[in-house]
Image 1: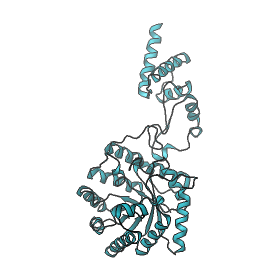
Image 2 (image 1 turned 60 degrees about the vertical axis):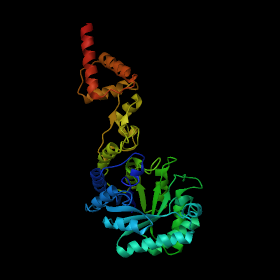
Image 3 (image 1 turned 90 degrees about the vertical axis):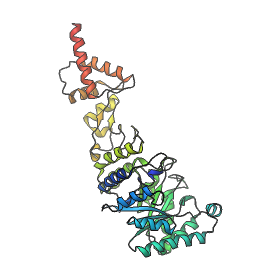
Image 4 (image 1 turned 180 degrees about the vertical axis):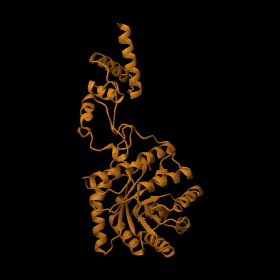
Length: 385
């Protein structure tokens, strides 16, 4: 059974300019718990006292979801995270030869000792603690280094090994396939009689974060990281709504309360200052809005002609936009919605002409404005007589 880790409160705050106040973080976490994500990654307590206080507040709320904290491979970080009362700690440290030599000035064996010492330390303090170890920039590090560090981490007590596509480097269907990488890593660990949960953290630099996450899912990954609005460093990570809907509809993982997603996204958008793009899948304003005349005509008869998802799974409703692309069928559908059944064909054509005129000025006509257009057309037609 796949787990979903939401990182809106940790990775999401690495979006330039994004910060959530403590009370908003608690509200976001509450919605994530209602949605049913398995792990809420609440933040990195060492970064600021405010983040520490927020992580502690969320951890003490008594959610069904496991509340987690981010941590460097340092005992001080672990102490601060555990002081918050979290049930999960994500420990990270790089294992690439280049970064070890040029940034950390140590060799792989020294790095592994630091990683395993911290894991053992955390497990000794809290034996039931869920620990994830992430080799930073996993997919671009030497594979043999990743395997050696991952195996040592599991033997030290790590429960989860996370494959981080830190730069959005992986591309489905190429020699940089996440499916192939996960499959190979699982095989290498299994040969050592090690069977940790495998997680994946996919960045969206090339626009393939969700595709890579689903590649990992097919390869048998156990945990997928995501964030509301796909927030995160640079182009962000996997979008939570898109992931949950796809897992639910296309992979029969029916475990999440999708009707809370719109409320979550509205809250995150408002307090992050990041608008939800109108054309964004699942949560965008236009995601279930039909516009062109041919589309609206067919969709008014059977929505599945031009929809592959039912908006009601999200508690949303489909709509029909009236603008310069509208035809008589979409107008008649909208007229029916406002209980306007008295217009003859000539009046309807006049209303449609006005709707198209408004559309050519870059606006759409909502139902309230449509009533005004109908009233005006009736008035002018009467006056013309």
